[in-house]
Amino acid sequence: MEQIVTYLSAEQIAERVKALGAEIHRDYEDKRLVVVIVLKGSFVFAADLIRAVDTHNLRVDFLGVRSYDGTESSGVVQIVNDLSRPIEHEDVLLVEDIVDTGLTISYLLDLLQTRKPRSLKVCALLHKPARAKIAVPIDYLGFTIEDRFVIGYGLDFAEKYRNLPFLGVLQRAQ
Ligand code: IMP
Image (cartoon, rainbow, N blue to C red; front, top):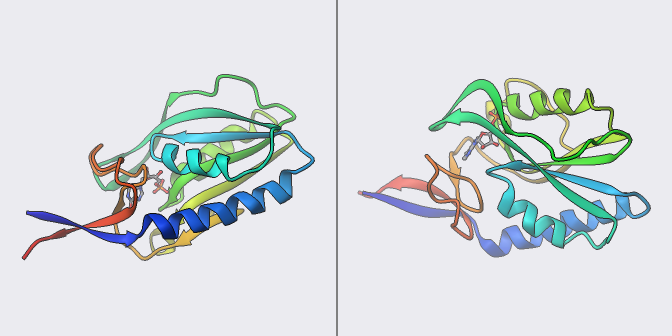
């Protein structure tokens, strides 16, 4: 039997997301922002984040990637759904759920740079520095976490648990 233990509560997440939204609002106040949401894991975080950014000058787009099998990074990033529009000359904010090895975000940054955005920044809800294989710049970060596999708030284990309203860890019940 497995048990889900709360790692970060819905309230803790909401408070941090609100602060991130305010920071992003300050930095992009006089710009037109393109928020690129990395699917699937970021969709819950991004939905809350964009509603915390108080501007009308914002559009969203989605990038579907697959980089994981179970809990281990394969190191191979596959684009399963590309952006719907060009981002040339745009101010782009890439929204990721978690930076673990860093391989996914690093691949995506290289890919998006080839499309010549005016600026390209990263917002990640979580960062697990203990597992980093490559250094990546995170301009807006929610939480730095220990080396635990977390689920919920959009993050899955084998496609399950994305709908949990908080971040949890799986533990074997005694
Ligand atoms: P990276 O390429 O190793 O940085 O992995 C990034 C992707 O792996 C994330 O976007 C997640 O989809 C997935 N991932 C990494 N760690 C976790 C975790 O603790 N829980 C759920 N998914 C994770």
